[in-house]
Length: 336
Image 1 (cartoon, rainbow, N blue to C red):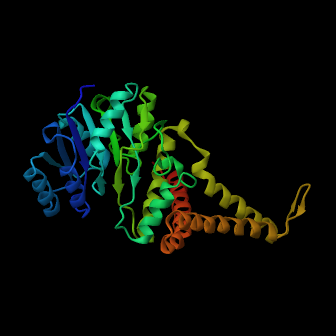
Image 2: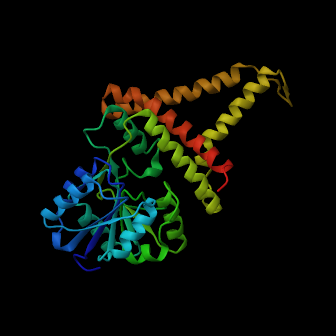
Image 3: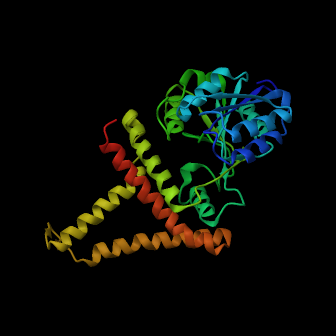
């Protein structure tokens, strides 16, 4: 790979997300030569926010292209890739903040690891977020509670199966070959990486390829996000049965088992070789789950020293389990 290849930053957006202002500001502060990268924004339609911030980037000497089409994010990424001038595509979201060495560090890892076509890294939670959003970031970022997000606590580069597109530098030829699913959202990045791996390509996690990613700041918004994640996970599993992972269904299975035990106890049915089931058994298991939620709060409190984040953590974890599982069930019973 050449020392300073041309990079195309491609961002799908609705044009209505207020955080795009911080994103564009971080783009202007990247420590990579401005003549060596471009910014491609693909929005639904012209908006004051999008036009204002694209002009701001242009005023800072950045090559900016804005396209409009009201389609899902996967199609927007494909559109951006088609018109990109760079050999490297740098995907991110419109609610992120890029660390100044984001491009440079990503390119360094791709250069040093020629067997890999893509690299990503942590997506931390901005310091100015509300306590609930920070608790979401802590749960997502914990290697004990949510390790497959590849966020906090992993200090070494490693091979991964999936990298979120909020922080993803990848060779253009690989994107052109595999392409994002045009209609799936969210989860189009998960489905993309499944096919990318099938095509024989590899993805690298690097701890110094950093962005900050704004989280949902209210329980209802987070519940909706988790429901959508679960729904599309079911769709992706339908499309790629070999991607089935029992961990995604753990809460659903646990709920079914627990409700079955409650029913057996209430109806006073006998279990072969065990007999009647005491109501204390499902109550104990139920209580154990809430103890685990409480321990999540203690862990977050220990990590942060923040009482509010610790208080929100059990709620965040419950919403994650409940919303994701509800979405999974809905996704499987709904006709594709």
